[in-house]
Image (cartoon, rainbow, N blue to C red; front, side, top):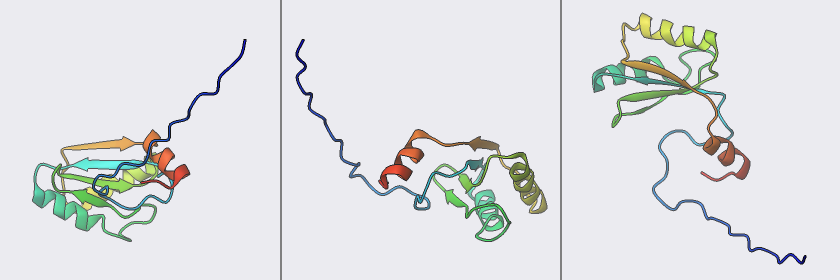
Length: 115
């Protein structure tokens, strides 16, 4: 049986608008996502989690369209305790808190240097 070579198709990176959020230098250890009831609570939380606000937490970024705050951090128990303590100290209530770990897109972007 003779095999014929197959063509390899290379898909170019998307040419749409740039992604919101921080640049990717490697896959994050995890991501803590907080969703708020209104823009005021989101702004207060963004100020509470600003750059350098807490050891072990990365710089947070907010998405006003979805009323979410994303905090790059490991997904461990101590991180969650820290996040809850910061919210508690600032008297901020979130509607939801979710923890996300590596996604295939993050791993792909880290290894290919594509956005």
